[in-house]
Length: 148
Image: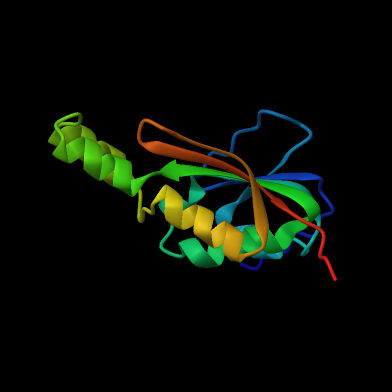
């Protein structure tokens, strides 16, 4: 089934499970599998949240999300930081069950905070807010206007 969704939405939030969060009427909720259907450069805000942890195509989905941003648009993303999970597991701060829950609870991939930041910078995004809390990273990045 081909689903084509053309939009000029200001704000898009991607989700991965079957139940999308109808929280705010000003946000268009779109399943990750339909990300490509959005017009390029059509969004002021794109929220990926932790979607990348639930796909094997992390880099492709990240590139698609970036392509949907208008210049001066903002991308929000968070996920499990593999380095922190491994550090906490090996130092005894997490037991095996907690580690398994963080890494395997429906997740298909993981990355490090540093690697995600590097990918965003390589894509010419400016990091405007970043934090690493417990075992998760939170990043907000902005697609800057092209400079000649």
